[in-house]
Amino acid sequence: MKVAFIGLGIMGMPMATNVAKKYQLIGYDIVKKETPFPFASSYEECVDFADVIISMVPNNEAATSLYHALLPYLRKGQICIDMSTISSATNVALAKELEAKGVEMLDCPVVKSQPAAIAGELGIYVGGKEEVYEQVKEILLCMGKNIIYIGGHGTGLQMKILHNALVGEIQNGVNEIFGMASALGIDLNKVVTAFSYGGANSFYMSGKAPNIISNNYPTAFSVANMNKDVHFAREIADEIGIEVPALRRVVEVYEQAMEDGLAREDFSATYKVVNKK
Image (cartoon, rainbow, N blue to C red; front, side, top):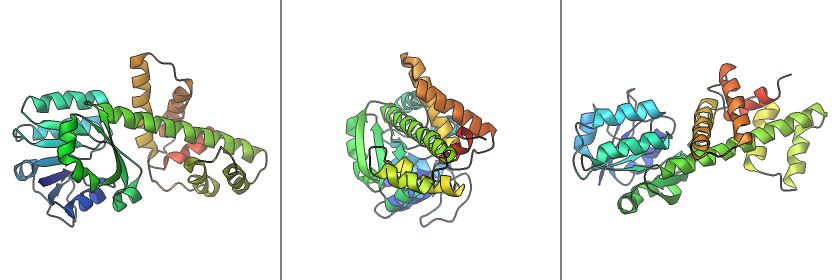
């Protein structure tokens, strides 16, 4: 199979690089970049070259714009794998448009951050037809070591949104409790050690504690991206009629973080919102 990878950002570039180790691949981004594989001149060249088109773009608008631009060139039998984190409704609508041309689509959002993308150790959630997933499974294994098929179109994205909503809630709990400990005058390094002895231990406690303690928030996953995802989660909750008070509080925190200009900082920077003096 020949692969075209569209969207060579922080995550897309290492993902494409790993696929290129085993498959013929060309890449494309709206910004010209130096790549270890051929860089395409246009969307049309990507579609003409590839059996499988992979995309990794920032949001609903970018995904919709991309696939509407690809649509005139796509041909029957091609497979599109969108690995962006967008709304499941947007993905389902795009999948229907592509299927009308005989093109299959999978939603395959990823979890973990850039170091895992570089190592080819992402988690990948798959939505779409299972038989189509089986056709491209080996390509996905170039990018991730933990892959799970969830169900029909949009379900991979639903799982990703649920995952990130829980991460947001966990981080918010860490922020609140670290703030309380700090107000009590307890050394946060001792908090990390003490919590590691019990059930309060978690990656989002130990892994993000250095950010909070140093008041430095290098971006592994941005406030802007988490803000997008927790809003998607709230929309899902509203659609299915479930009340989620902790999630709603998290949405408020991220809205305030965006207003405070923290969009590009790591999502653990929400500590500054939760613990304003």
